[in-house]
Image (cartoon, rainbow, N blue to C red; front, side, top):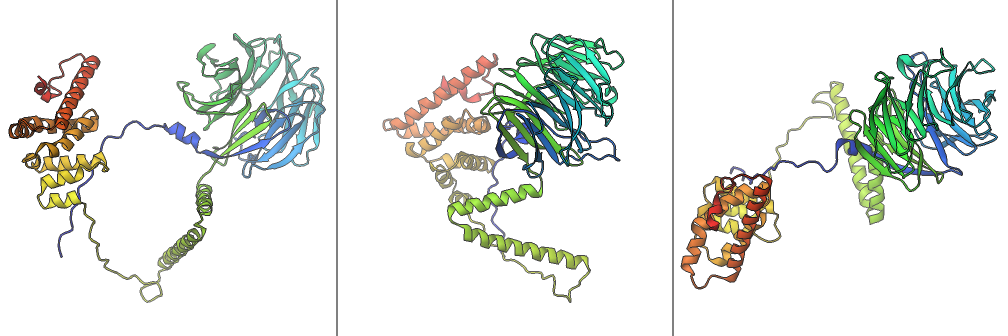
Length: 544
């Protein structure tokens, strides 16, 4: 039996920088966009936070959307509308689900705060202490019966579900209070709020008449968001996002990547990414160490609310929900595991249907399923210890090796016809990497001089043109420079001495073009690195 033919191994070049970063690739996995129409602008999107108590697991199978005078509840798994709560006398604001998923709270423009039973949609509690619209309502992350509210009456209040009145009233803002929330972790009893008086204030329930800390900005505060550490707060003011350090009592960084007012902030990837939406129609993602933009998306209408909905035991990002001024709700889903495979198969089926090859696709799919079933049966038989006497037997079959297809230049190289191999690979339609591989093989065999001997100007021109064309490419530069020394060393002098008066104009043009390429490379190198580049390009002495 003859030894199998060894093919020329293709050269491996260093991989350049990837056109997209891992973060961009991650956010591109949010596909399968579903656009839902609402009758009014979508002002708020939320989902129940994860429960830290194993005895009270989080029922995070739904997320709520506040739009107009209604609150719509959607399924995270199916993205379908489950329930609608319409028991509001005016425009609703900031509907939030408690972490156990059983209770929801929302405010409205009448100043009323209502608490609903998620299952029956019944009103469990109503408070009317606020005299102007209530824009923010939030449940405490640690206490199941405690919640806060912020209103245009310039007050911030704490509530207890069993009581009929507010337990604490914070006074200090001089304008509308449009955003607020509890701090996480060990500081969960403290409240942070943002107001149109351009201040972000930190409140301690033990001192209701005075804020514990105040940060002043140059524009009204639209949204505040604490990081999971509890010592850093993000505040959106105009088109900027301030990163505030509670320990140092000063701003750490100011993000200036939006063109218009930032309206919404949320965290993603378990608190390691910040997502912002603005009136410029952009949703931008930031990393939380240097606060650089890592990804983004453009929407057709000003963005009023954005939320990255997480689900599962590991709280993995599942949905990217964006609410817009036009009343459109965009929901993008990040598929995982089996769902991704099913979506891929569905896309293949639709492509086959459009191309008219559905029968071929079905036949291939049935064949694949039969093979999977046989593999499964074989594994089960081996697991159960069925031996050679059973229906499942191991048969050793020696598969005859098919001869490896050989290209023309590979055959010429194997037969020692180096000049013919070089001529064959220089066809116009062949990729440059193939020519490079042949030059490398000739150099490895020390046969480049043999391949260039006894040539006239007609056979030299294609080689010369290829070298001149790919000399500026870094991956080919070393080989092209090596080949050029051979051309100027013995190939071109041989042609010129043999055909002194008949040298073609095409060869002369190629020679001049090669000189221009080398001169341009030298001048560019000297501009970028003002040193002697003659050592780098050793053959430049030929230009004189």
